[in-house]
Amino acid sequence: MIRVALLLAVLAAGPVAAAPATQQEVEESLTCQCGCGLTVHSCNHIQCSSAEPIKDEIRRRLTAGEDKETILAYFSGKYGEKVLSSPTMRGFNWFAWVTPFAVVLAAGVAIVVVVRRRVQVRDDAPAPPPGGDPALRERLERELADLDRDDA
Figure 1 (cartoon, helix red, strand yellow):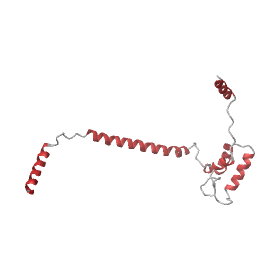
Figure 2 (tube, rainbow, N blue to C red):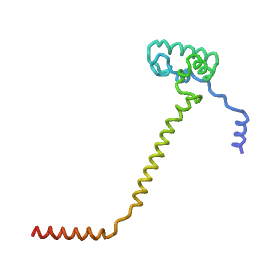
Figure 3 (cartoon, rainbow, N blue to C red):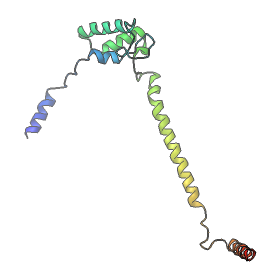
Figure 4 (tube, helix red, strand yellow):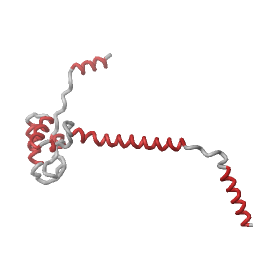
């Protein structure tokens, strides 16, 4: 009963406010524009002409109270979607998310179909008679008898 009351109290309190984004979280969501291909946080160029100003801008905006989505929208507007470290699910970018999974799924289905067809072909083949082919057995016995005569 106490657990139910506690659960109802938590639900009545409303949604829990999300923790504000950290400087590192925002920096890792943006790609450095110097050409290194790393995130702003990971750029290893000393005094990078791109990463350092972006880090300063992020710091100013976080201090002003902006959330992560607003900051990312600002940089996306300034540099284009290429600044985002992962593609969005809008426009043609959804294709970049879906294609690898679709290819793996299609390959798996193709493998299953091929394997099942091969197994069915082998199951449908007629089984040899238990004593073997009588003509072949007769020929084998003749050749073995001829071989025995040649050795003697």
